Length: 115
View: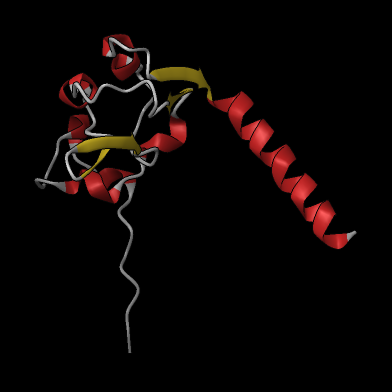
């Protein structure tokens, strides 16, 4: 029989947000509270890697040594990557507006399938 892991109460949490184990950031999808989303334009990118160097969350996706996009599960939307990009290959857009557009597209696709 598998026992459910008991969740910690507020009294069990470390004071001051101390990090109690190394490398635990992969467990937490911190991109959920982002206000601005980076949009990557591969055609403008010169592969200078400045975005990779300056991103405080290591949220730049690389494949075979090239930038291919953003890890939106961990990106907090700080915009440092966009500010450092010399080719304007990264543009910051309002997350709420983008999500609203995505919901509208999803609803439209659902109606097209039904009809």
